Length: 291
Length: 291
Image (cartoon, rainbow over all chains, first blue to last red; front, side, top):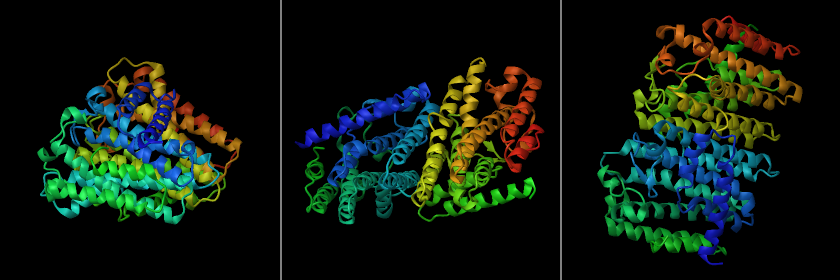
């Protein structure tokens, strides 16, 4: 199967799971609408695909990993909804559509974010209850740890604190390691755990995830500088406006591009001993900025 | 031991656990400060006490239940922080102190709430990983289910949707069942699970929790009408101002008081076959409005 075929298989599977979870009749109806609006707004399902690929690489099945892949996308979406709020990044466009609070109001957007985070945990706990091994529980714990106050939320907090200050290298790495890379690491590592990966494969997935995380963040920074609102479906140029700390701001565009390519190469190299065409191809595509 | 001595034992234990969790150096420092500000702002630790009492009644220990008691208080606190935000209830006073967003700003308050919800899940998942039985995992699942989009968050969503509309009985019960009673039920039921309660005791704890939840909500409504800002440490009279649906608004004060007393009596009766002095005394105190 080609990269695109594997990707379509992963994306279709996780979209189906998300639809099933979000159409559960026990969710408050208007809240469910607000949650579904942002979850189904598109996106590459990067985190879900990484989790499913890592699980399959370790010998597990897509079916077993699906609740965790859906949970990752719910967590990612909640973080975007809260990030877009007026008190945070104050963004009114995301993936070409008005942001959640523009459509549903700020109060409901806050609740939709809370709801997605909580529902992600609930879905993972349900799956862990049905799992005879402790693999599912370990995967849920990994995701909770890296999504939380040691991980993604710590990155967002530092991002908020750093706004308007002069860019500093240490702060930039802290923000990106936590705000972006931690969730990609969680995807790969929890996927490995669900598939029953040994220590060597877990280490390889970890290095791959760290490098890929940095490469994605640099790409995000570059797109914010050079992309167009039409092609990206979100506001651009806001990093500069908000004096945000970014790789291009710190190192200049050319050096940032070189760094991105190097990180992609190192990511693929970490998996050199494994038959992992999907993950290696993703790194290669990212280096050429075609993912 | 007297009711007050047992209560002090529970409160001291959960406060100690919360301090340990919140002083973890891996949390982003300013975020940790914002989380700790609201967690340590006082409060009766009602949910933690119910969980610990139910666990002991079922034959379990306080030690084993402590991560879950702390998690409940984190979830309760996050819901208050987000509820107080300008886009929700817009409250600037809570437990006699300025609310979280007044002190730390709206963006950080949103993150502190997200952080507490996520950290609660993380703490429970860590405890479940160390538990040889599935009791801890079942307790975590129970809490996630009732705190989430079928439970507390559903109640908050309906509360938001109902603001400014004419009070309707069905809506009132939906909001209170989910916004308040679900978390009390989660406390009692997860405590029972952690102690290894049999089905009969689980049923009794469930009925006790349902009745107690309604009684507490009526008390909250009455205090908002008749309490003073000085004695309660929070703004009063806001339900009426915001045309909120409350028991007194729907039934009148006297009938609401009678309902509260009846629910307390029925709560205690549900545990009549058990040696549960703390839980019965709590219901009795609530009926006399001395808790």
